[in-house]
Length: 413
Image (cartoon, rainbow, N blue to C red; front, top):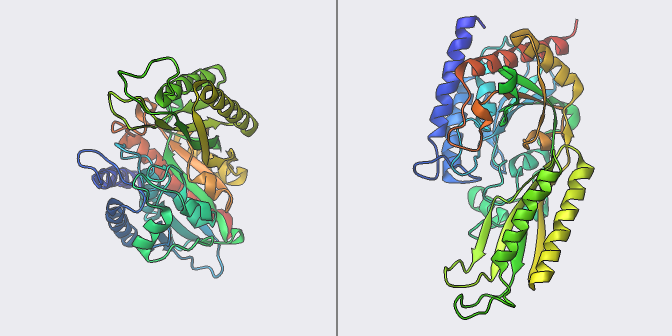
């Protein structure tokens, strides 16, 4: 691809990210969740771009958008590229979407036929917004969805199973989309969601590993009562217990870097100004690049939650909704990606991802590698999330170069 065509592709990538970013289920802000009408509109838009690039397009039984380009070589293995099309609430337009749209544009500029098949996947769910458990899309694709996942409930008390039945007419547990021996690997391109590349003055970097992650929901139950007539002594205030635990969570993580711990959601019942809270439900997101340290931190957190509950006369119920081990990126593919990065920007910074990605799940199916793209101020999960067009152009160049190198390797001498 000539330099001016790279610039044109980067411009189209920017325009397509903006167009997709206007598809939302909430007026005035970007929110696109699992199996929503907004996701169906996103499928129509992105699926059209895939078809224009020569891909055969389908939506699988869990709601993943898949575009496939067959190889001219009989029995050739498949390279998967992709990321997720769902968003957090009030999101930016780059997170996830970049890794779906960029490969479509890159593939359009690669010399064909390729000695391997290509599958570009827009995973239906990664963020865990609707059902408080992430990776439902990639779990379905990799054949790792479990019966317990189908029983997860959203805020309206609808299960994953019922949502799938409404959308597709059935909700069977999917089998893996591929056998491992059929796959070359998985490449995910994603904004960094952190400040490292910006500090290094680099447009892109290569991921070496992804931190492990535990998520869950804790329910504290006390006793509701009149705010004016119930004495302070002996109150069983669930919200006060939750507040104590939330502050302890922050202190725990501050003392134990690189551990990060977040209580991102808190629901209070009956949620009335003049009534003592009888119930508080909070979420925990705990991450660490070393699994033993993460698990030890979770045990400490749960012990503290139970101590607080006992002291305050509260019932305490914990449900683990996600538990993902740290994932190391596959060295052969990552080495090839580093070569491509060096060929475009001379240096190839190596980073560990604190954020989870679909590559965490795909690693059980295929070797994975990840390309990070610089984002302004390291900001993500926010409407001001931004990656500049020159950096998008660098990322496009790298992916095209990577596909070329992989094709030469697979074609052999």
